Length: 73
Image 1 (tube, rainbow, N blue to C red):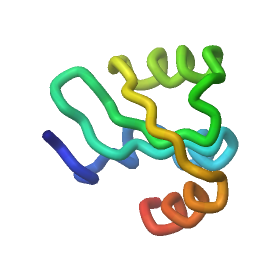
Image 2: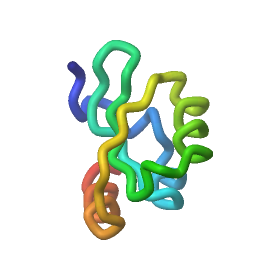
Image 3: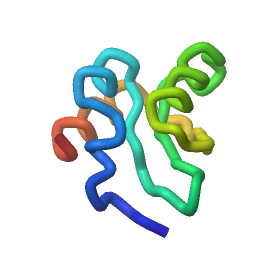
């Protein structure tokens, strides 16, 4: 399982900030993503399209995501 290693290149910073998402780790073809709104199927599908990976969503608050994005990018 790949954790944190160049995952910021998978989802662009501007996209991450606009949609409150952050890649966490990758296991094979599955990307774990922290999201403020994992029930947003359009966003979920867009992340799949951008990354080419299956998505495993994890819920996080917008505040926590912004702080993590600041550290990651």
